[in-house]
Length: 177
Image (cartoon, rainbow, N blue to C red; front, side, top):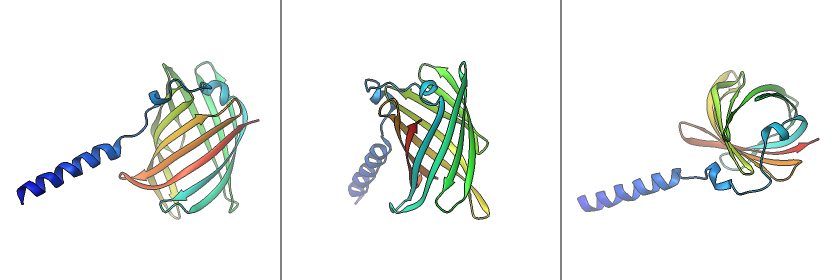
């Protein structure tokens, strides 16, 4: 009986460790075209996106009109969301190029600082967002990946979770105007 429990515990530990393993920005270091945030997020952009719940059902559709501006290592990305139900939101990111592919970002509804790492055509952002739902505000974590496809198109996939439990995904297609 003890041996069975020990084997079960070992198997659970292996599944836990391998279940947490995922891609790292360095995995994309040789991918082209190389993502330069200051170039891609400079000027007007539009994005179309969906939020899917944990079952995979589309819960929300939206478009985002964006404008990026830069002064040296500091950038501002002004995002204006319009949802399929007519609701609107605005998020203004303040981005900082820390060098060596490292980025930081701040926005009014982001708790603390977003931490980003870029390599090759990819960028991974990790941050906590204050998400209003009905009359409450929840703090949810995002594991956000962006992949530059060409000089006009970037794809974005973000997993949203709370206490390590996956709540859903945001999928976006950006287009540089």
